[in-house]
Image 1 (tube, rainbow, N blue to C red):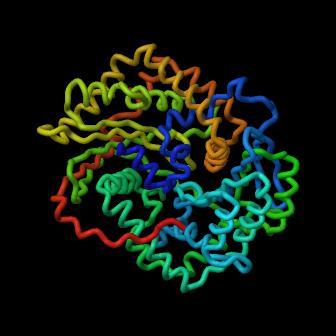
Image 2 (cartoon, rainbow, N blue to C red):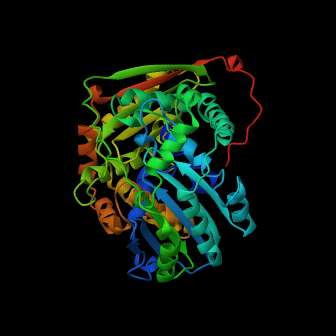
Image 3 (cartoon, rainbow, N blue to C red):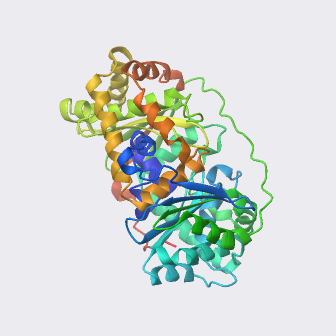
Length: 478
């Protein structure tokens, strides 16, 4: 798995139900998908509709009557970046605990109720947010609202349930990180690239912190961040927005607003030289990953470098036959895999990634040099107009496909809200991509990829048979 995909998998932990529309989608393609509003796919100009409840909860409704189904999501503005040192992973642990029952709904009953009406549900945690969703028949929406509002303020978090669930989370860490060498590389890359910002901590948490975590830590997190004025409700499907607004007021509107703490603004200090680190773990192939600090989208109309970096990532690795796979894997046969990625949508700072694994007989040093040489080519030669045209055409196509999915549309709205943007920014996002020129791509390639800003992590394989025997599987789904 390419590093930027591994980052999405590990950081957001978006399970199979939402992976196709979440952060595992290439970042350039996701911004294109979020941005494009085509006339044929926008039959109601005012759709989506938005309001705010008296307790501060934001509500966004998008009417899509093509099927008698609805997606109901609650996004909390609290993720791993809001944790304090010593409690890494508590946001994700609390996500698990949210399925352990309330005063009126027993442990595990939430999932059974959703399944009983023919629906599906799950949750995911990232650095920037924690989100919960159900997809159910449209006539079950108000029931889902009542269930979700109930656990927003009546969660029963017992010591006994916590003691069992923390072991499930630790096993999840073993299976998805400690037994996955490239996940370990990503974890080390983040810890090395960031010295001050909380993105340095893994979403799943450090095992040492999980070992010491208590039920009181989870209770404190819940009391601190789970409040209607720290959440966005997203509803997409066969609904009437006025009815949804009324139902939201009758359910979520009955939950009292919370007293939210001030969020400290943590700025990453300037990097003043190349940072290198090594991970030694059982693996079949060596592997190298590199990252450079790059801008995050704050103003969709002014932050033009973000769009150029999205296009740069796509030119390198956005489609079959893109530069890295064509040159390093097929033509030169230096690498078994080579990738690039950039995620400019976040509450915190962003990184641009390159990664690769050498072909038989080749070395990590050769792969690293070849990856950087492809960047250097763009710095000096730029990109071709046909490459730009293909990237933009794929961005358009991705939006058309995304709109076929209720979940995809809900993820669009929620993901933008989670990073401080809005569905109302879609036109500006589209225009930003449309305005990218070949010279813009060349310019960002020249300005953001110096040696002094580079972080490199290499995977040095240990014999695979040195890996401990696999542990019996523990159910990790809620």
